[in-house]
Length: 111
Image (cartoon, rainbow, N blue to C red; front, side, top):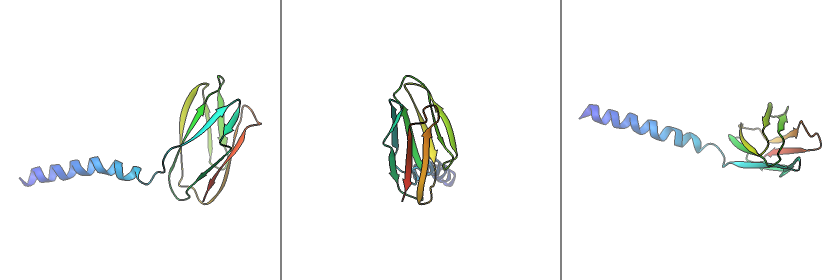
């Protein structure tokens, strides 16, 4: 009986621990690349929380999501999506750009 209770407690922790850690992460955010431009050009998020950003490249050519501020440099293939995990971010403005098409820039504002 005691062994069964311990097994149920361990299983319960294994099930709920990942769920509780997700509660600390903000809802997913999306940045779309279309016609070699980021949309939105400014993404505002809560500071101090983990952040998931989906980069949706709707152009047929690959693009690079690059940021010295965020310490990221990742290529997203044409007509593909990728997920970038960030944070927790301190309050501030974090610049990013499309390295293959320098005209496309954006910022993530953590507040």
